[in-house]
Amino acid sequence: MNKQELWDNFGRTFRDFDLESGIYKAPGRVNLIGEHTDYNDGFVMPMAIEKEITMLAQLRPDRKVKFYSLDYDQMVEYNLDSLEYDEENIWANYIMGVIDEIQKLGSSLQGFNLMFTGNIPQGSGLSSSAALEVVTAMTVVDLHKIKIDGIEMALLAQRAENNFVGVQCGIMDQYISRLGQKGHALLIDCRTNDYQLVPFKDENYQIVICNSRVERGLVDSKYNERRSECEQAVEFFAEKEASEITALRDLDLETVEKYKDELAENVYKRAHHVVSENARVIESQKALEADELKKFGDLMYASHKSLSEDYEVSCEELDILVSLAAEAGVEGARMTGAGFGGCTVNLVKKDRTEQFIKIIKEKYKKETDIDAEVYISNPAAGARKI
Ligand code: GLA
Image (cartoon, protein in one colour):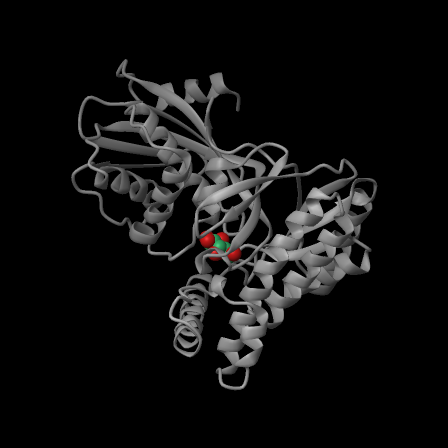
């Protein structure tokens, strides 16, 4: 639907109050490398993708908020003074969480109507929920003329997910959805929240995303379990080595190895993954800047191995997708996002992309009886008003 068609639809859905209105977009993301490092104060390197959520909204003269999901064809209504978790319409909680956080800043809001639609596959690790949070934040803040910078907005959207939705995610997804830039990945330092642009210089390569179509069932409980294992590791190292150690970011591999026998096996493996993954992100930045795509690809495969064996967040289907990529001679492949299903990200030579997709579809179907979905995306722009 183009902009006009969307506004027509909005006009049929809601009465016009002749008040401030606007249309906004926020993208999903794929993480190129740096997995499960964000909540360890580490490094990540995601890019925004060419799949996004579009939101239209208009202020109302009262305290009501009405949300219409065009894709679900569902309408919900709440009052700004009594926002509560909605057990039935789960999607509405991402929106309410953001409104709640904006209200916590002390901003006094007025009611509004909003409608949204998107094409980010849900439950597949491409951050459709972060995109919904970020586009809501853009919308509400802009309609009320509240000033808030990009990083603050990403942090606010993250708090919405932590506090209202109840998932203890890190900052990566909301950050890249808000601040992504066309033609670039972002190297984000999740301790300082600074970023550097990492250009995709090489015209010969393409990012290809393969969706295992395995729903990430256990993801929330396992995610929180991994977080607490990392905290255990930090406590251990702070006591043994130096109290300045406040996150796995502060360790090197040598120190991790030194205590291998004293640590519980799972805690050692989690620390080993995070510390080695941080180093791989920095290596990847260098490789991409030097246009050494082959090297970057090797780091992607190494990341997958570490996620699968040390961090234990892969699953059979993701491992199959990565093996098939390796067999097909693809430069790099790894699971992306939280894991336990979802997608792999692949670095593929442009002239071999078609062949690769054909192989993946055929062989994955044969091995798992599932039809994989494949998306090609260039690094896209972050959230914006259109
Ligand atoms: C999810 C979280 C992110 C990050 C990744 C794993 O996408 O929302 O904050 O922790 O998992 O890298």
